[in-house]
Length: 284
Image 1 (cartoon, one colour):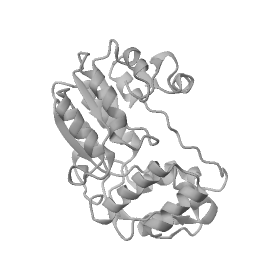
Image 2: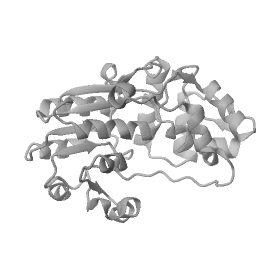
Image 3: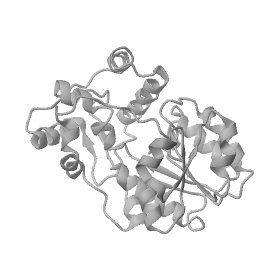
Image 4: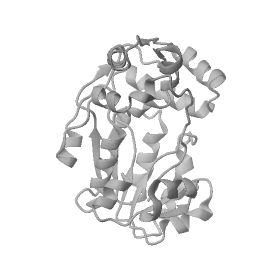
C-alpha cells in the first residue's frame, strides 16, 4: 500500500510501535513516527499535517474499544477520509471487533471508506504455514467451507486507490475478493502440487484449534478467540462470496491462490522453520 501511494505521488507518514522497522521497510521515502494505540500521547505527532488515514486493528488488540480513542482524536483534525481495514461479511456478524469499529467510525462523522477483503492469502503462507512446513498439514477450523482468498498486495492497491481519491470514495464500503472461492482441501491440493509433497487438510474442531494455538503455539487468548470467530463466520458461508470490487477500484484482475503459492513457494517449504508474527500497525 505504501509503495502504491508513493507511486501515485502521495506524501506518506507511517506510524507504528517500531520506527526502526518502518525505516528499514521504506527508508527516507516516508516519515516514520512513533505510534501506539494504547498511548494517546503518540496521537498528535501521528495525526499532525495528515488529511487521510489508513486504520488497521493490530492482532494483539482484541477489543474494538482499544481503537476508539484514536478515532475520537481524528475529529480534532481535518481528516478527509479514514480507510479502515475491515472484514468481508462483517456487516452481518457483530462478533468480531471490526463490526463495532466500523459503526464507531460512522458515528464519529469522520468521512470513511471501509475496505472489506476476503481472507488474506498471507494467512496461509504466514501464521498457518508452520504446520504445513513441519507437519505437512493445514490446521484451520474451517470445515468444508469455501473462502475467496485475496492477496494482501491487491488489498494494499485497493486502499491506495481509496486514499488517493478521498472525495470520490467518501462514506463508501468496498468488498474485495480473489477471483475464486476455494475450500482448504483444494488449497492442500494446490500446495501439494507446487511444493511436490503431500499436504493434507486436518479440519480440526474449534476447541482443538483454540487449545493448540494457545498452549502449543503460545498465542494470546484474545487473538486466538478473534480467529475462532472469523472461522465461525467462514463456516456459515460469509467468506465464499466472490465480488468484482477489486476490479472496479483498480481496473485489474485479482491474483489467484495458485499464482500466489508459486510466488511464495519458500513459505511452505521446510528450508526455514521459523515464523514471526508481525505486530506492526501501519497508519498514515
